[in-house]
Length: 219
Image (tube, rainbow, N blue to C red; front, side, top):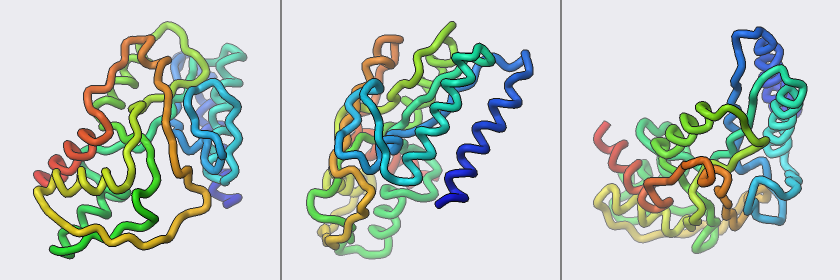
């Protein structure tokens, strides 16, 4: 995990050093909600103390602090966007991709890792994410961090239903009671900062899943 941590930190630090060139004035870092990974407190807003307990979460938070440091020094105008699980066309991995593959391979059952109804978290369609990035990039100044994701929360059980709806398929869910220790069982996010600057999600978490599945079927 040490190499993983250093790769993230050194990568962001290197970009910050390069932005000391006066032609570069704006930097938007795409972080994610896993900066809170392993914490016992759901990340409701961008303001509370964040105390990750996994290498991945720690590396994300470190990168955010690097961005903030350079911004406070006046080297750049920078901010961090904490994304939720983002879905859309051309998926190559992730739970939606896995469920689609499993459904194609098995016409009767869909194997689901975890205990019913599974963890709950927000999912956001990439179209809404891009819209948020464009809004942020046009601002004359930024706050330290923004949550850019839906405020609703979707369980794995409901996510599976969305995948099957998008595929026009019916499967029986077979649960395997295996969980990852670092996962947040429930994650709900407050995106009021983004709403204050005019961002609005066009798709709920469930609708984002259904739309993404249909997009990947037609590719």
